[in-house]
Length: 171
Image (cartoon, rainbow, N blue to C red):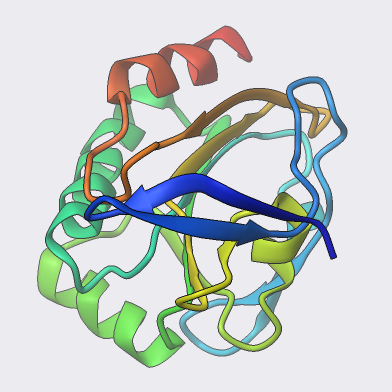
């Protein structure tokens, strides 16, 4: 399996990302994760929609919490043709609890805990921690990758405006 050492850091510590690096213009790899009710979810479940995939290390950390709540509040402005998925290695039960406690109802939280299928398909699985790197992918309606933002330091927030503009450009 492909590895990229030092592709991201966490609190300054270089980390290794595992999986094939996805590039702009690539067809988005399909994957299977589970939703908060343990049902399988695939990328192919979101036909004809623009998709923002927000990969985060854990919803139970301050930056991931801020990021997911921010995308939840922005989701209404993007309309029904855009879906925002937040994928982490958190257990589905923890994601469901977190969403309920924070009023998150527009972002779809999904867990990659079983097989790290998303993390390895998109090249964002952190080898040393078995968590996902903070990375945003924007996919057009045909599920081609149109935008990628790998946040260099995992403890930093992404550039929200750039992500939102990329999603709007796909409409």
